[in-house]
Each structure stands twice: as C-alpha cells, then as structure tokens.
Length: 93
Image (cartoon, rainbow, N blue to C red; front, side, top):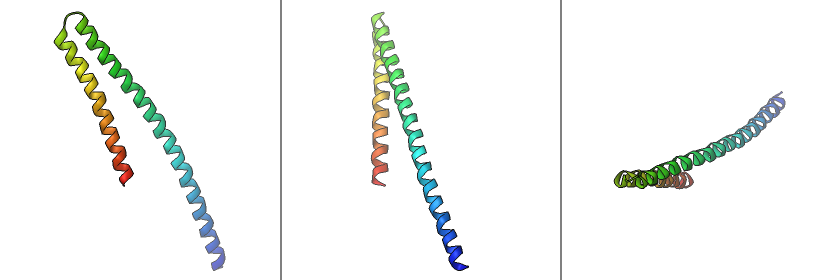
C-alpha cells in the first residue's frame, strides 16, 4: 500500500514538473511577443516625434522643433538605458 502511494506521489510530481516547464515556455513566448510590439511602438513614436520636430524647424519654429527632437531622442535613449539596466539586474539574481 505504501509503495503504491509513493509511486502515485512520484507520478503526480512528474506531471507537475512537466506542466511547469510547458507554462514557462508559453510565458517566454508571450513576453517575447510583447517585447517585440513594444519596440515597434516605441520606434514609431520616436520617429513621429523626431519628424514633428524637423517639421517645426522647417516652418520656422526652430526652438520648438529642437525641443521636440531632443525630448523624443532623450525618451528613446532613456527607455533603452532603463531596459538595459533591468536586464543586467535580472541576470545577477
């Protein structure tokens, strides 16, 4: 009787480990997809900001155009640096 209970417990533990591994693979796929779309959206918004700044400078609003270009570029660089530091922190843990 005890041997049967032990076998049953071990088979349940094996099933749980396999399920956890499958769930982790699915989570990685979701994170990868979300990361890709986040990069696309951020790039598009950054491009629009820089293009808007160039358009402002073109029509004679030099200071406003420079401000928009600087802000768009700084936000992209800041997001890149913040993402990079998060990755290095996660690797250390």
